[in-house]
Image (cartoon, rainbow, N blue to C red; front, side, top):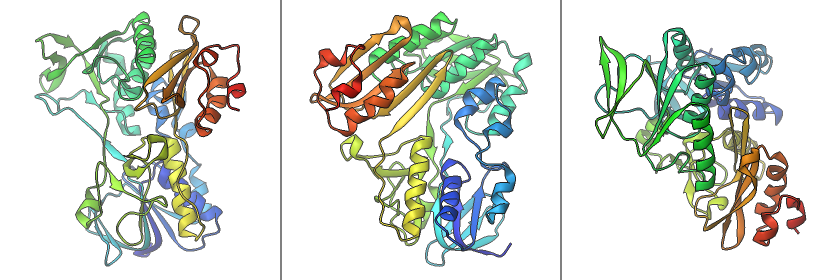
Length: 409
């Protein structure tokens, strides 16, 4: 391996992998180095808290491409390598072991690291995140001896892990500090539905639960202590309270950052020849009324990777994709399109008791997002309502007998 790459991609997750794939699809003939912290070839992260954790999918089935794919496309894989520093003037990266790599163009796709507890006991054995294959493998190796699990955080990761562990027969207590689960990403109707469903499956789900300490014996967790003094007994704890964007090297190099590294519509940072994509990239998003946001999703990573690669190839493109997300819990498939933040009204479409319904989010009468539970048709057709800035009659929106596509005119 020479110590230079025409394009260096830091981060071998969804965004980094897609950037390398798209560059070759666009007939880029120079050298590409794909650099990853983990020893594994690029793989999908969403199944980590779902199918992979449950044992339903082996690792080979969540790999983004087979190993040989990267060699066939002449992508140099630099795995198990951490970039400590960037010299934007010299166009060079420095690795944790002191080695350097010069680059022509850099794509930063390093994602983020799990936000962990900082309270007493946070570093006890048995406290885990769900971000990497190693995280999940470590938990799976212990499950036979685990009976009680405390999950801290009622976002998608926490809820998905609760569903898997409940199916595996574990006693699960889920602790959410806010007054409802999914509070940052969904309306109250959806939160109430998922809270009721998890409780019906046996999860002890507690909202307004503030963790003040992790208790232990002989360096291993025995429980989680709450602000009211209660202690939740636990053999294992899973922390799902978000990520910290991995931008320290960019900050130190002088890039403009604010809750992530700031990028323009072509995913360029403020530093020359450096792009940033995925979970760590803060961008102005028209589906958030132009506010600067970070989107932690596969869709965003892939779309931004495509924009960066095509921009490098001289094509006139800009990032303008409608956000979408999904989550699987028990027999429920949640599909979300648009961003519900800032909504001033909701319309419930269908019957939650029938386990198939949608929540439509409105702002000034305009549809801005949908959460669809086992309602794929609504998800597919609702996208047009958002893109068309449609303002349908709420009573028609609420009628599941009226297809959403008929309201998109």
